[in-house]
Length: 288
Figure 1 (cartoon, helix red, strand yellow):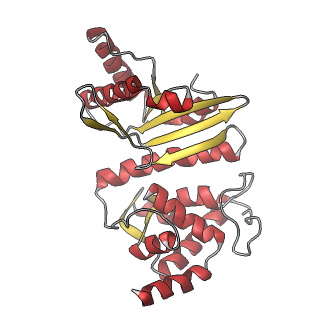
Figure 2 (cartoon, rainbow, N blue to C red; figure 1 turned 30 degrees about the horizontal axis):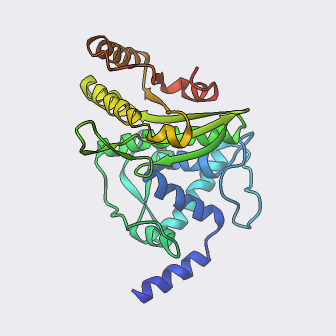
Figure 3 (cartoon, rainbow, N blue to C red; figure 1 turned 60 degrees about the vertical axis):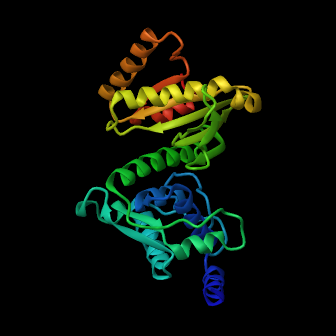
């Protein structure tokens, strides 16, 4: 164990702030494609400066094109991979035609130890090849998080807080007195001008049956009824289901409306359904 600790300390001393930022992003979001890592940490063209600094410790080098940024991203990830800090999944997004941009990355156990070394980051995770369903949902959630960061980088909003799973999960006492979990995909606070917007975000891939969506919406209402969030923040977040297309949007909206008709205690006011292509504008406009 002492040798492993020494090895990690030695490796960590060679990493840049950007390297550590990439590892931190992989720990926070669990899975990221090369393209998402590029968008988070490798600016190009007119893109605003992302998190992390260059390997020289200065402002990150701005790449002339997305293609150049992609090459740099892959070069850094390959170096981290050679240190056994990150690993690529066998599955990739878009198949072989997607090239390196579709490669999916996760931390290794060594990468996890390095990130946690010297800090209180909770218990160590196990890093295995995840299922297809977990992979696609995790990446869809990460995509929303990246879009929030890009909105902040571009000055459209201020990103006050962003919590991913499991940090965004909440516990409360259900009406029957038992402990219950609320498990959003993301919790975010954005600000524009003098106003803050609070969000619970659900990345919907169109694969869950509507009764599952309704049960999830009911759990949100039960949590709102406790007043816990309101007592701390004065408002309850907008619950936004981010869906792939207009057809799915209509399906979920109809299911929520039907539930409110048959069950008077079910109020739809806290819920919004927005298609993925309109998500950034939706957040920038405060959910209007």
